[in-house]
Image: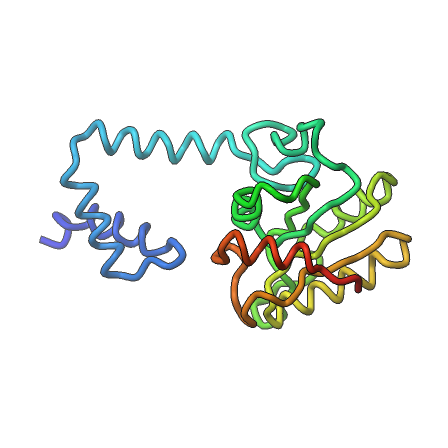
Length: 199
């Protein structure tokens, strides 16, 4: 009998590995997939495999992209002198919704967190310093969450960047302490950016 349910168990376990998906939700998703026509499952698995095989990191900003250089970095109308540093691609999406920031981005893919085993070497800091060394950047805006990890990462980056002669600013603390930028509304993000302070 257990063998009969094994494919369902395996599927449930795979959903359960996703962030924020508990056992019951994973089971519900697995059952949902099973109730759909075969074409749905094939389209779902194809979308997953296509995304995994074609999406990469932009060679400039480290954002996810289907091309070597992402559309934002390719846009000649963007201000190449201002680069906003964010934790993940999700923050870029939230900030782009404001339609106010016209510079470029740099995605760290995390924040320094010794408790989670994340050190500066695990982040895309080397790539940021490489961009700065090319000489086009005049301001780095640190748009990291007002958390212990975000603060530690901001201070670490400021110590590395300021000696290079580049202005380093940090968003105003209009965001609630401990909150994630990706969940903030556009007005709050815009105010935090406009009221940024130099470090």
